[in-house]
Image 1 (cartoon, rainbow, N blue to C red):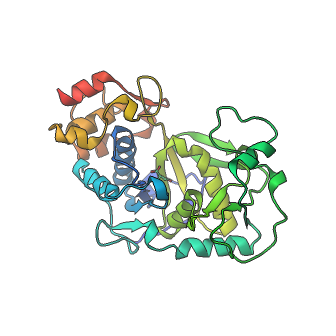
Image 2 (cartoon, rainbow, N blue to C red):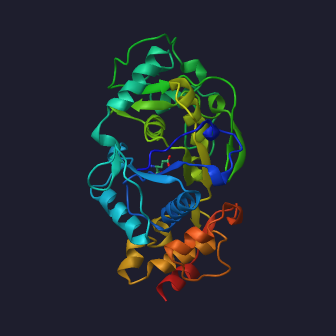
Image 3 (cartoon, protein in one colour):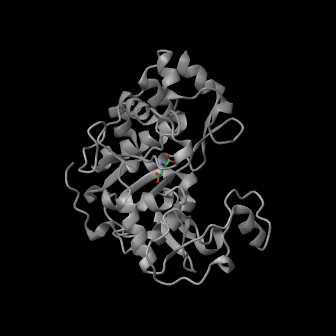
Length: 338
Ligand code: GLU
């Protein structure tokens, strides 16, 4: 990989000139299932923005979510990405197989981060159950799938060792707001202390939770440009707090793009029929059709037309991407398979 020189202009909020940016971005799939039109759109946009912006691109397999990980899915995702024309760079932490950093192969960087947080009184073990936390929360949290961990449940926390790796550990979320400039979603000001409270950063399975692992890895892979679905927008504030508590920098720039939904407005899933890329591939659909559909959804084409990977790079422009979710309709499916 061309060694990225991460200059101070990558600091969050600095109006760096796009033409002079030299960034590093990443594709970070969780191998929990096959690539479908929704995550393929995000990856295609990420790849095209990286090519367009002259950023290098690294590949990471986020396989720490034990029960949801599917054997073979990581390789299948890499194969499907290649078929779509998406390539990435080598990286010193990458494996021989796909130049991928595979999170489960070495937990020591995450343990070191936990040591640092625990020694700074920024993390503590807590085995309270969801029911106990819900019972302590002041008001019912309707429609919220995450449980807010109220500060009242936080025990006294002092500097300590990371001595109970078979417990859940929570982050001491500091009070106050976190602001950042999202390259697509615009200025964001979030309040993690009230919207989530002390969130889990290490699980009793003995593995880091997503929020911690992603920060440790984005830092050690020198990632400066994070492009991902806007379902993760609420995570960005938590991740910035972890960068700060760990003393890591420069902080990345975030680009959160809308997801793809079905005609019912719900996030693309099995209930909308088979939208896996491999399904279309097995039916003889050319990748140019999938890329063209993605480009049309993204405001980059006036109508559904075939588009090559190189032409997507030439066309990609975040200012054209609609602010609302892309909708996968039966007409899209009919056009793909026509
Ligand atoms: N692995 C996560 C996912 O597939 C993405 C994490 C990220 O981009 O920060 O949803």
